[in-house]
Image 1 (spheres, one colour):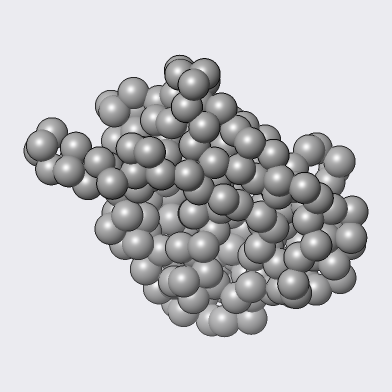
Image 2: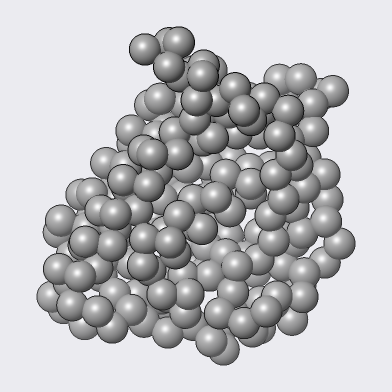
Amino acid sequence: TLAAIEAARAPFKNHRWTAEPLLAKVPHPDPAQDLTNPADPTDNPGSVAPASVQDIEMALSHAAPWGAEPHERGAVLSRAADLYEENYGEFFALLTREAGKTLPDCVAELREAVDFLRYYGANAPVAAPAGLFTCISPWNFPLAIFSGQIGAALAAGNAVLAKPAEPTSLTAHIATKLLLQAGVPQSALQLLPGQGRII
């Protein structure tokens, strides 16, 4: 098992990721900023272009609730969970290099994120959505809590503006892309990396 994990994350040992806002319209972010591995200051896992004020205003104006039926939303969140698991090698490499997590922490982080998506997807309510949610996640659980907040809001059909912690925005960027790939509408899920000015 350990050999399989090492083989899956090896291609990302020196990879450099880039992230920017993921919006319903073309973003116009601020200049990109490099990130540093907290466990190895010589390692630069990538860069993040923070959302600009214009991006935030655009995301607010184009956010729309997810109008699909509850079972359809649940199926999409389940597909996202599958994609998370399929991409475990990249997640494990990035969680180590961006958040300084040990391998057991990476495994637990991915398991919890997948559990959140499957749980909320299986329990999608039939009630009307509440509206627009801003989900602000911490750096210490950059995949699990990020996914849990978003999964709960999306399962109920709400629109989401996702604001990840500044040090771990690369992980959030990959997670958001996989959620969109699974079928979450872009108007229902927009990523706004950067400083806390969104609040």
